[in-house]
Every structure is written in structure tokens, then in C-alpha cells.
Image 1: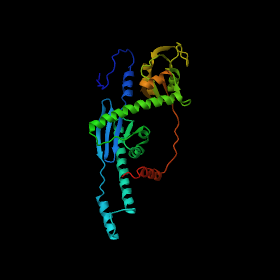
Image 2: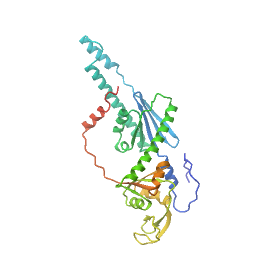
Image 3: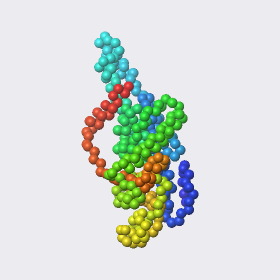
Image 4: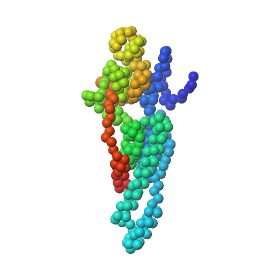
Length: 313
């Protein structure tokens, strides 16, 4: 036996037979770790958001030494017999500052990507002004970029404890609203989605379900075929696929294995989102789709990055 400490308390239960993984899956789904970055012009603070809340793991100030730039500009302008830099010289100075911020934010994205890779994190929250957070998002690897969430500015000049409390509150509020939007979108769409226990299980076992949404308390009785392994919500004692005998099981008992086997991500919903999903059977999901992305040149991407930080200083 190996003891694995959990920071979220499971419920006591006794189960005989195959490993019963539902509670561990549910704990992971409720406390999926994420990386949070708080950005402003002075620098970035990086946190891991997990069971115990926010834990800061890095801080990086943004320091741009412009003293040698100004000296060269003053020397150049002195030869012209004019005042401090202005006009074209000022624009050149601003562009150099912008380029330095592009470089610094690129480094932030690299740190986030490395940390997420080392700790198996696939969710990123970027808090700050959009001109900063958008730049970091565009520099992340595609898998993280698609899961990155931009949230309005949080000042890093506040005491660290105050920042963490505000961030945690914002993340909880964001997740609650996001789940409500996801459920509403699911229920209002007519294509690319599935709802109800029987249809959701059917698409999941075909490998066509990309993500599954579930009210945690939902745990109906199911049947599993002892021959082909098919799991259905049918009340029949015979398998609809091969006509062999089926055994009684439950959704909580079978779902972890099915999710792993078919590479499907589960998300538990609660509160208002759960009450909305209950109207469609308490379970549903999005079907897999092929993504087609237009090719873009390296120069176009570089131009877009620089343009996103216009007038940053």
C-alpha cells in the first residue's frame, strides 16, 4: 500500500471488485490545477492555482535600461542644436521600448510553458491589461494558447496577500460564469453536441466525444456486456450489440475507465449550471471536430506581436 495525501477530503465508502476510481476523478475535476500570471508594466507574478488556492512560484520585474538610448539621442540632437528628443526620435525611442516589452513577455510565456509542462498543467489564467495578456497568450504553445483565459487587470502593486485573495475570488467567479455559458451553449446548439445518458455514452464509446459535462450527483444504473464490454443505459439483460448477457453497474463505476480509454475530458458542474444541465438529463458533451487553421507567415506573426503593443509605454 502507498498512502497518497489528498488536500480535498473524500467520502468514506466500501467497494468490492475492480478499483473504484470515481472519487479520485471527481476530486481532480473539481480541483484541476492551473497557472495564473498577473501582469502590468512593472512585471509579472506567477502562481499555481490548485487545491490549497494560489501559491506564488515566481516573480519577474520588467526592467528596461534606457539610459544609453537617451544619451545617444541627446548627443545626436545636440549636434542639431535642438531640445530634448522629440518627433521622429521620440517615435524611435517608443518603438525600442515596445520591442523590449515584446521580448520580456515572450520570456514570460516561455516560463509559463515550461512550468505547465513540468507540472502537467493545461489551463492558464492571464490577468492584466489586454495589450499585455494577449501578447503572452500568442506566444504560448498552441495547446496552452487554446486554454488561456484573459481576465481584466489586477494591480501587482497591492500587498501580495490582497492580490491572491482578489485573484482567487475572480477565478471562482469566472469559472462559475464560464460553466453557465458552456451549459447554455450546449443546450442551445443543434449540432455538434449530445445530451442524455444513453446518447452520451454511445458517442463516448465511439470515440467521438471531445469533452463531457456532468452533474456530479448523477449516478444511474447501467449495464455492461461481459463479452464485448459495451456499456449502455438499456434495461435489457442482453447486449444490444452482441446479444450476450449484461451485468449491472453504475455510471460512477464505469465512467473513469471510459474517459481514459477514449481520451475524453470530464468537467463537473454545480450551482446554476447544474440546474440547467439537469433539464437535459444531467449529462452531455461536445463532439469532436476537425480544425482547419489558415497558414500564416513568420513575418506576419512577428508584425502582429509588435503591433499588439502599440503605445505600451
